[in-house]
Image (cartoon, rainbow, N blue to C red; front, side, top):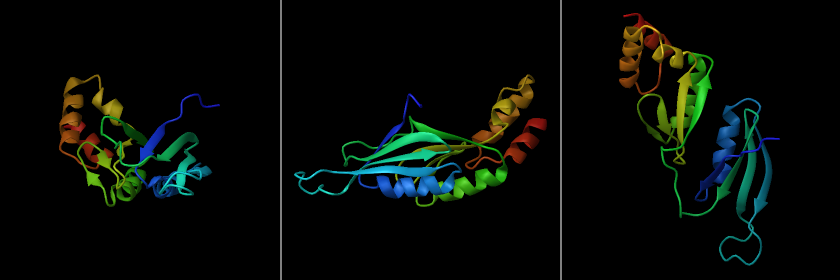
Length: 156
């Protein structure tokens, strides 16, 4: 049993967001969908929460209204096995959203994601400070991360 479950507050797009997210990751599914009960003007029968899994991890999405919004202070960090996976997820998650630097983006729902290739942490923490610095400098100039270009930059 997963003890801690991320709970994501959307205005009214929880179900739409969950459909997108579960379409992008293996081992993902949509579970229970609960609806607002009778007696809530304007909400009765509408989707309240959506339980879902992304790559086997549990999440809950809420249609909570406009009271809160996402901030880049909290993001979903995706470790990608290949550059092709980086490219695919970057394209899908950035569509209609905002592209930022260093592998960060905000999707069309406002949720921040970091799309990161495996090997990046090792490059940034290389025992050779020059290699680490060159990799970090190259990363700071990128929006979508390119592991080949980062490795090349680290080599000098």
